[in-house]
Image (cartoon, rainbow, N blue to C red):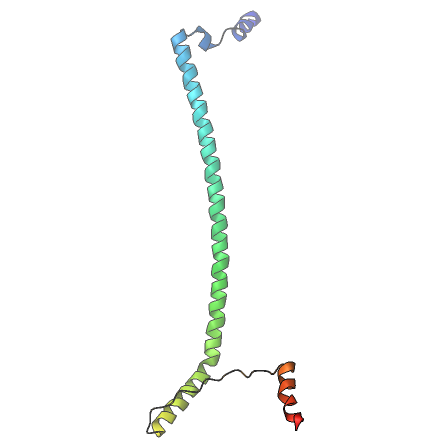
Length: 131
């Protein structure tokens, strides 16, 4: 029995006993299958890269959204705190308009004060000391 089992191990592969046309077709199918597997692996790799990129973009957008929400909360807080001031100013303005016969005048624009530089103050004072 040992001899027969040894003979089986040494027997040629099934493709070797197939007619040449079938063996060639089988080899072509195997090559095509290998090519498909390589394309599938490459596609999987590209898909994984795209998924990672999209996940990073989503993470970035979430951070941006959190920042915007924080800013909105700060603005809401400022508006809430300033609300009574605006209400008071509105009432003051409307009561002023009710007491005057002429239409209300807009509030004057406040111009920032200019600071004199050292050379301006020196030249301005120089004329005063000549007398």
